[in-house]
Amino acid sequence: SEDGSRPVLTAVQVTETADGVEVVATDSYRLMWAVDRGVSLGQASGASLLVPAYTLSEVLRFAEGPLDVAIGDRRVQFRSAGVTLTSGVVEADYPNWRSLVPQSSSTTVRCEAAALADAVGRVQVAGRQADQQVVRLRLVEGAPIALSAGSDESAADDECDAEVTGPELTIAFNPTFLLDALAQVEGEMTLAATDARNSVLVHRADDPDWMGLLMPVRVS
Image 1: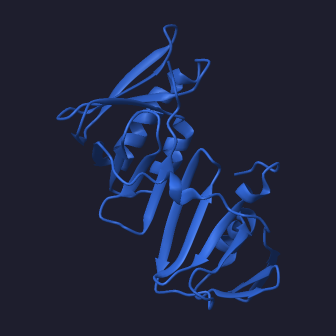
Image 2 (image 1 turned 45 degrees about the vertical axis):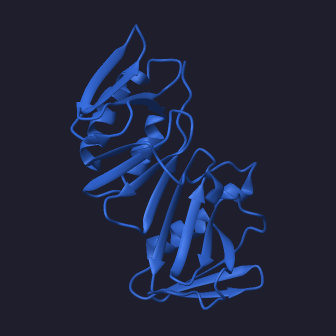
């Protein structure tokens, strides 16, 4: 998030776990989670710190090869490729995001992420003319995803081949947020939803180490 009024949301939660290093970022409307297995920060399992997102962006820009991380009192230091970056950490309680992750779903979708992103991009143009920018996905078992956006004055429809299972569901998303999640997936993805109001899970197919979470847009 870039919302300076909520500093905790401008940070990425980095946590030492028994499996590796877990990272989480959210702006309260969407969330992305990943774990890098087999690496360690040298901290006790469960130890967590909040690193400003802009700091990690700089680290990704210069890091090449091994990355050394040193954690001190309210500071974290990154060293790679002859460059050292020291940053303060955000001192706050991170939102309890785990409570938002659905434990089950009723409707699931499996499709190519790039194909869905292309379809979202095509209908998004019409949605920009509407008062509320949303893209609707109509999910019907045995049929392609039916996408729509816009209003009576300017509307667009499209389809995306997919394997849909479960009850019929129409769900709306902020197209930018949906596209951001799809951009993190190469190849097949899965989308799991319970209804049109609660958070929706996005996974890379057969990859347990990454997850996206999107809040649908409530529309009439």
